[in-house]
Image: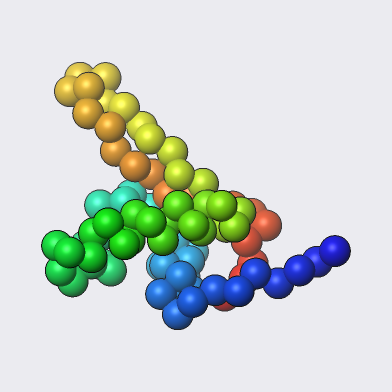
Length: 83
């Protein structure tokens, strides 16, 4: 069954942004683009988790070996042609 996934306006914008940046983006770049208030930061992360559950993106934590800090990489999945 080829069921179309329902997307909100902001989810479509996020997918388009990732597509226009080679299919991958850092969470910090998405935050800079889509978060206009510090209060919205948690909503962006929740939205990304929902998009991952829908099978549109993959969230990967990448650890910097020197500092030990992790960065979140958002990768567009090949089968996510919805927008």
